[in-house]
Image (tube, rainbow, N blue to C red; front, side, top):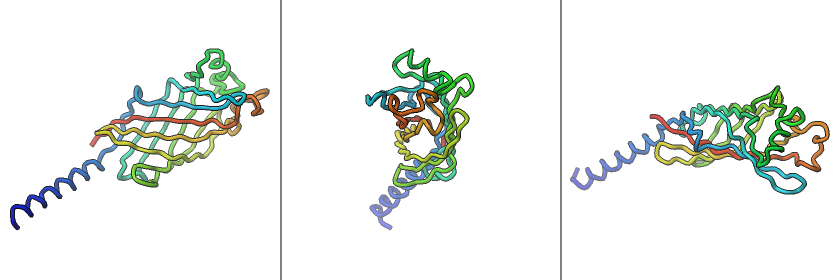
Amino acid sequence: MNAHTLKITWAAMAALLLAFNAQALEYKTIDAAKSNVAFSYKQMGVGMDGKFKKFAAQLIFDPAKPAAAKATLEIDLASIDTGSSEADQEVTSKSWFNTSAYPKAVFVSSQIKTTAANQFEVTGKLTIKGQTKDISFPLKQTAQGNVGVFNGSFVMRRADFNIGEGMWAKFDTVANEVQVNFQITALASK
């Protein structure tokens, strides 16, 4: 083996080792300051946005082994920020989230599978106001060194969870569909 071939062989082995190490990252620690859970909906035909200021996420995710991944997201519903303190008080009331009886919305994954490079389909159970529904949504993962950014979104129908009861049960004032968008930033360990 000449010196040039040996150099190419070592370079190829080093590249394979680096690729293996990149795949061996497992994301576990959530960076809450760089994560967010937001939503958008229509009220009287006008687009509105909001977010939740408090939530906790647990994640065990190795991009090379998505079938073994686990994710849980708990949202403190009383931390809602609709941009109006009056609206925030209304949506925490019994007719909407009823946060005194049901303080959290909880999502627990049951399956995560690869659909394309750095893209996954997540399936799990979402529980709000004592109602549990199966949901699925696409998830995109972007690696930035030992940081993984996970972006996903899904449409939730508030009627499925009895959000907006009584005079709010109709969808002429507030639409049934709520677009939920989230970004979870996690740190990896080897």
